[in-house]
Amino acid sequence: MYNLITIGDAVIDTHVFIDDATVQCDVNHENCQLCLDYASKVPITGSFQSLGGNAANVAVGATKLGLKCAAITSLGTDANGKLILEELKKNNVDTSLTSQDPRTLTRYSIILNFKGERTILSYHQKRKYDWPRTVPPVDWIYYTSLSEGFENLQEKLLAFLDKHGTARLAFNPGSFQIKNALPKVREMLKRTDVLIVNLEEAEKISDLTLAKAKSVAGLIRKLLNDGAKEVVITDAANGAWAGNVDEVWRLESFPVKVVAKTGAGDAFSAGYLSARFYGHEIPLALSWGIANSCGVISEVGSLKGILDKNGIKKMLAKFSTIKPSTVIARSEATKQSLA
Image 1: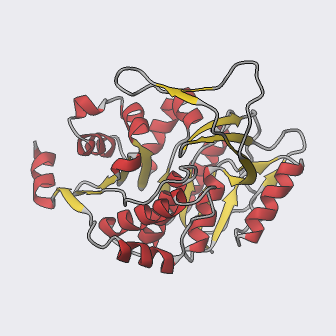
Image 2: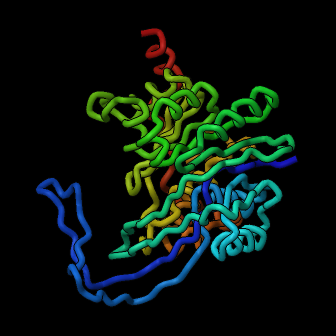
Image 3: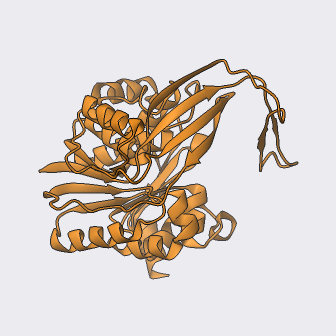
């Protein structure tokens, strides 16, 4: 029996570091663009490749925190596909549920790193996502980013959840699913035990802007009303919020030096979900998520800074004065639910 099965794409990330670029933003310092000289040779200061993709990153992160994990993902039989399999096995993630299709190429991305921020050039190809013939019992499923053609696999996932009523679902929809198949995303909410999204994704899924919701807690209430049992919303340096019908908590991010942000969201998910698996309540789960994400942004690459339990403990001890705070308490939540 597995503690966690992740479902989603796995990729090979090629990280490229550049110094010779500029960033142009609008008057509100939003809608920024990375600018390179057109039709010129741009020097780089370094590069390397690593395992990437939400499903792979979360599986590796949760395994490091002590969970027995497997990944349902579809790869090609090309060099990148073989490399992903090797990396998953090296990180003790079970690959018996992973499939390879010689008709498609494995996903890959080029990540341009500039002054601590990253711009991702991502290759997606329509593929046939196959549900494994046999999926053993599992405590948690983490369903995340997939590309074109994911709908059949989602139906198989729903059938699996119907059959295995004790399996809990954490849902972290990807950009393709939100942009191109929002109704399919929304239909999953009623089956979702924990929804993990960033602020922009929360606005799109809820069809509610932060301004209209009046607060992040308002967005959480809307997504709870749409069916999710527990909602987590991350907002980069502003930290994260999490709540259910009883309460909403917030934890600010820890003041660590940001080297690169790739993989921060996946590290948060691995930390948060692992804490919930171990029976910890929402406030401590937020702490595990923030600690793990801060570990990753302190290094370059989505896996280099992921923490084990001892690393989580040390990070929380280092920033022991920064604790989760109640945004909506149980009594207030009860009043709002009756309103």
